[in-house]
Image (cartoon, rainbow, N blue to C red; front, side, top):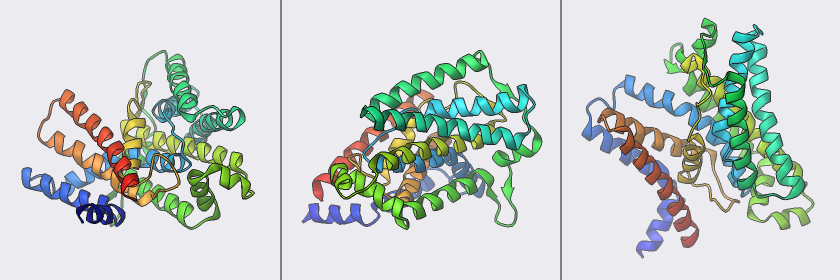
Amino acid sequence: MYGIKAKGVLRRGGVGLVLLLLCAAMAVTSPYFFTWDNIRDILTDTSVNTIIAVGMTFVIVIAGIDLSVGSVLALSSVILGWAVITRGIPTPLSVVLCLLTGTACGLANGSIVVRWSVPPFIVTLGMMFAARGLTLLITHSERVSTFPRFFQLLGTGEVPFIHLPMPAVVAIAAVLAGHVLLTRTTFGRYALAIGSSEETARLSGLNVKLIKLVVFAGCGFATALAAVVNTSRLDAAIPTSGAGFELEAIAAVIIGGTSLMGGKGTVIGTFFGALIMGVIRNGLNLHDTPDHVRMIVIGAVVILAVVIDFYRREVR
């Protein structure tokens, strides 16, 4: 009886209920939690992880993984800084170069996966180290800072009338685009089919290799978009940025209801998962929790996400 009830909760948007309960608990323990300024901070701080997690959702839906997103974010960011500040290339063109960098890294990951059937875990692990090393080489391990004022507004400005932070607006737009792509297009249905059974999808006539290639490239593009937002927020391209972002993105995706085994996922759930991660981090900050304790809690959340995914598959 209780197992059936738990199963129903997990299937009917339990992640939303968890988010509400978590917010209620934070509100009880801190009078500052439900202030508008704090909510703005949560939305802003969660934006980069949300954008990356949208791309990661598609990768995990096809039963893949991308461990390189943190390093690719850093590489895309320093390419943007190098173009704008070191070479004087116009900012819009530099943003395009940044997006192309992330997309190229995703294409490289996807190409190796589909060409030689190398497990995505191994390929993206290699890309994680390669991209980070290239980032440090380009910058000589030094940050690049002071971007044009109008570029900074992307990370620090807000939308008039509704007063939402610009990073949050970009993240919400990415979530909506990802949701439509996954649930309302043929491509999304094909991606889900590949995750459910790659062999069946291939026998059905789907171009599995092309779809997987596009998914990895899309994840790289989403990561580069997150790099643009992150660079604007910090007003700097930092070669060490993005460390650990891959784990937070994966946790957000799994908490949001996407199965690590592929074939099942939702971008809206991923958004809720990212918000849960953001609320936890914000609550720890409000209580002046030491950094080492925060790392322990985030690590526990990642493990819990995997356990939740296992339980979801067991009760189906």
